[in-house]
Image (cartoon, rainbow, N blue to C red; front, side, top):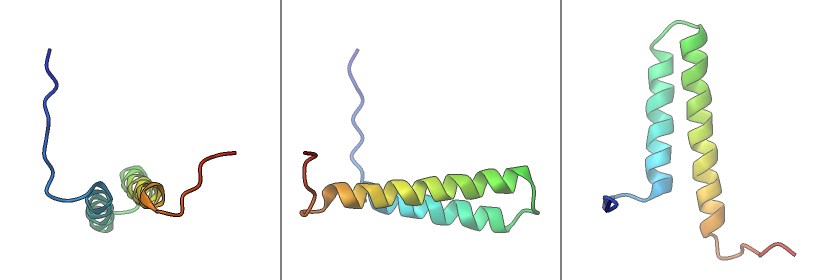
Length: 65
C-alpha cells in the first residue's frame, strides 16, 4: 500500500494557528457548556502545538544533554 502525499500551501504552525482561531470563533457562537469547553480546549491544544513547532524549528534549539 502506498502512502498518499499531500502538498500543503501553508506551514504547519500557520495551519494550527488558523485552526485555533476558527475553533475560538466557533466557541464564541455557542452558549456556555460542555461543547464550548471542548472547542476552547482544542483551540488551546492547537496553539500549544503551533508554539512547539516554532520552538522545534528555532536555530537556538539545543540537543538534550
